[in-house]
Amino acid sequence: MPVLNFNPFPTLVSERFILRAPALYDDEALSILRSDPRVNQFLNRSPTTTVAEARQFIEKVQANIAANQSLYWIITTKESDHLVGTICYWNMEPELEQAEIGYELQSAFFGKGIMQEVIPVVIKFGFEQLHLQKITAFLAAGNEKSIKLLERNHFKIDQALREKLEKEEDLTGLLCYSLTRPA
Image (cartoon, rainbow, N blue to C red):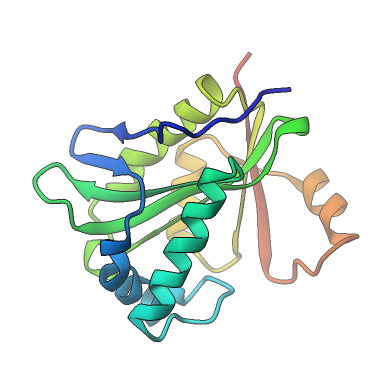
C-alpha cells in the first residue's frame, strides 16, 4: 500500500500548461469557475455564489492536501498564472491503490484541447508517483465531451464498479469509468 505524502506539493508541467497548488489568490477566478452554469451543467454541486465561498473551498482543499487526502491542481498557462481550470485526485483509497479523477475548465477555454493535454500528465503522475493501480471517473451520462476525453485516454466503462457503488449511493444518471495501470 502506497504512503501518500504531498509535501512538497507536486507541480506538474505539460507543453503549454503548469499545474500548481491552489492559493488563496485564486479565490476570484475559482468563484467565476464554480458559479458558471456551463461548467456546472454536468456537475452535481451547488454553484459557488461568492468569492468568500470560493476562498473557503480553497482552504478546505489546502487542508485536504496537507492531510494527504487529495491532490488539487490549478491549471494555468505558462505565460500567465491565471486559473483556466482545475484537475484533481480525490476519494483516494490508498489501501485499494485507487483514486478518482475530476476536472473542470473555465467555459472560455472549452474546446481548446487543454484537458486532452493535461490529463495524460496527471494520469502518468498517478501511476508512476502515487503508484495507483486504478483511476476512476464519474460523469453525467449526457456529458459527451468528457466521455470522449476519457475514452481517448483509454478509460473504459466499469460496470463492476458501478454495481458495487450502487449498493451504497444513488448513481442515477452517472457513468462509471476506470483506467487500470498498464502491466
